[in-house]
Length: 259
Ligand code: PGA
Image (cartoon, rainbow, N blue to C red; front, side, top):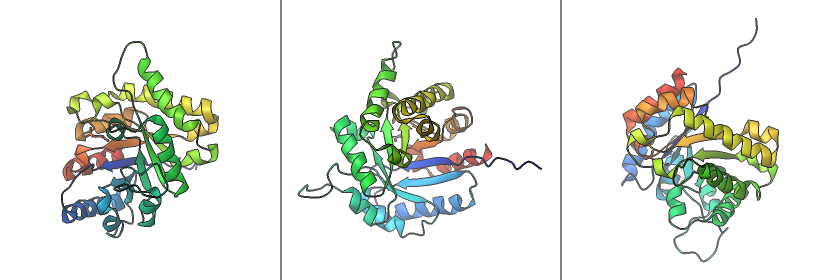
């Protein structure tokens, strides 16, 4: 009998941003996700908590759930008060770092800074979730040019052999933190996923393009996550607000399992 091809796993990233207020809450939510993740056949969960909670969550029985940082500094170490290095994040057991989130870009991260952050994260042995996305949509395909430029900045500086450690999260800025009805349609997500893979293939070869993982983020919720995962031809989701709503996030994991 022909062996059934194993289905791909979806990567579901919980970007908690500057929430919750207490470690107790963070541990409680992470504990629920951990128990759910153990039973999930199709979802790989990554929680990106506020930096002060990373170490505690790594030690909180997160065997199945992976822990990531929401950002890392562009420099390896030094006199940069308040900054957090990729090596420090790795040293306490985190495995991922989000880099280039639009909220960091809005706070001053240029493409050049994003590239340095990606390089520091990779050097430290972290997997990178690289966020790209246009500020607004237009009818002249300027949004494709904007996304391509953000991608090429990184692709031109990272060794091809390291690209497997980078997952691209397409997050259109105009859809982040908005009404859930603003989220992109599965059809548009599919289009962008193809475009991103094509751009990677052009820059780094067909293999890299085929292997590339692309996530979608921006006003994902329990209702729109199902169609996105089943029809959007993506490898997962980056979830902000609804990753702190336990029922919603568990429901999103259920969607992944039901496909
Ligand atoms: P949101 O955030 O799901 O609350 O829109 C997504 C993000 O910023 O990563």
